[in-house]
Image (cartoon, rainbow, N blue to C red):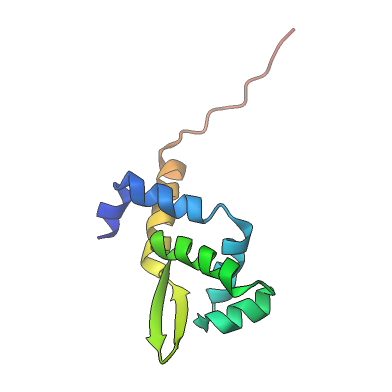
Length: 107
């Protein structure tokens, strides 16, 4: 599944676009160690629920977070598989780019 997603350009673009916002990065940083409900995230980030909902929707659409419903609360956690896909895509550049010696300009 990971290899298939690496070749899915649209999925990669959505993932990287979702990562391009500082508030969404803050949400992901919070989710590194544990799952959190919306109420916890709004309190920690001091953000309104409506603004947070927009960012969480973007993260869900990019498949960067998992959700779990418990009663009236939705809990969020990082989708590690998707993070690995993005990481592997970037690591292909590191493996394939040949490091050339530094050019010295002469006058």
